[in-house]
View 1 (cartoon, rainbow, N blue to C red):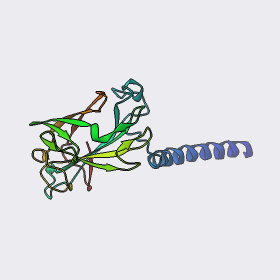
View 2 (view 1 turned 30 degrees about the vertical axis):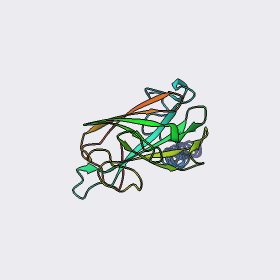
View 3 (view 1 turned 60 degrees about the vertical axis):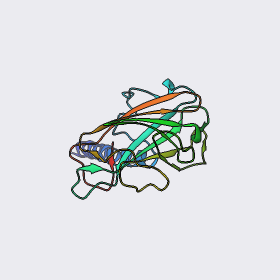
View 4 (view 1 turned 90 degrees about the vertical axis):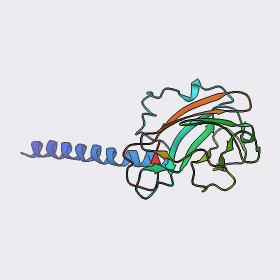
Length: 191
């Protein structure tokens, strides 16, 4: 009876340990900046960091904010980026916005192109070093981003936009963002 009870207790302890690990691990990885929900650990992504040109930017994530009250559109698009291998001057970056309309976008200080995008440096400044991150902000008709001209109209449910980010060296990164239909609850939505 003692040995069977001991094995049962060991099995129960193992099950509890695995359950706790499965509950805690995603949270711990989330705090570390790793998102396991999008397949970034499984190698299923279409483009990995190793496939980018040295002077390119890597898109880490993208979000839509400024969601309207009836939850039918997104007013601000934010794209988190980091350099692939070499430093990148943000003032030399252009973005082609290809959605319902197409725009050539530049940072506000450049003052060229069809409109501009906002830049929120999380680390460093406008000269982005490998490992540093910044957020490109695109105003879709809300006038919420100081110094940036808005790009077209709000993005509606199911609408997609393709961004081509080109650095001063000519390296390009292309990503397609789609507004989910329906929008999940919350102040921001992953695109």
